[in-house]
Every structure is written in structure tokens, then in C-alpha cells.
Amino acid sequence: MTERRRDTMPAIHAAQLGPPPVLLLASEAKSAKVAREFAREYVLHYFPEASEDYVETVVLVTCELVTNSIRYGTLPDDSVRIELDTDDTRTRVEVHDSVRRRPRPRPESDRRDRGRGLIILDALCPGSWGVEDTRDGKAVWAEVKAS
Image (tube, rainbow, N blue to C red):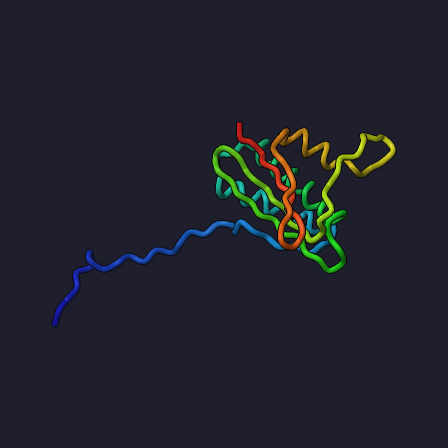
């Protein structure tokens, strides 16, 4: 009988998995909260050295993109897809929806309580956001730079 030595047997390790980079959400207002939690968990897992300000900026950008997508980029029963990618230099947030209509900035106004999303996005990600057509609609993306 042949006996195998313990040190020659392959080691089996459970992979330490973090949050997935993609989240599918229903097109409803309460999805913004889920999006914030997802972004926070994702960044803290994959960029544990990130400052609290950096994480909160990514969370705010994610929430603004998701909220705009739900308000202006979806039809009833549609979904919104978030894709995140992070490293120690930046976090990219993409939000996909089914409507090709592109977001457009609105003039600042003290009379409206809406329409500030792109102004906020410009302030948090100057020159680092845009819109791309996709097969099924569009993707609005933004990159938050780590400092």
C-alpha cells in the first residue's frame, strides 16, 4: 500500500470573496439606499485604506447616479445596474439603465428641490464623468479620484 505524505497533498483554501462588482436594482426610490450600502461595503472591502471622506464621496456619487437613473432613465418595471471598480487610485461607478436619453445639466435654482445631481457630480468628479451608449440603453459613469 502506498502512503501519501501530508506535505505533498494539495491544500484547499476557501476563497475569500468580497462583494461582487455588479448589483441589479429595481427602479424604485428605496433602491438608492441599497446602492449606498453596496458602494460603501464594496470600497471598504477592496480599498480598506480609503479615508472616510473618500468612501462617503463614492457613496454620494453612486446615490446621485442611481437616483438620476431611476427618475429619468427607467420605465416602469425596469431595473438599474451598478458596476463598481476600485483600486488605490480611483473608484469607477457605472449605472446602466434602459433609456437612451442623456442627462443634461439644469440651471441652478432655489425654487426647485431637484435637478442638482449633475452639479454635484461635476463638483465631486470634475472632468471625470460621462455617458456611453450601451446595447440596451446607456451607462452614466463617474470616477472618484483617491488623493
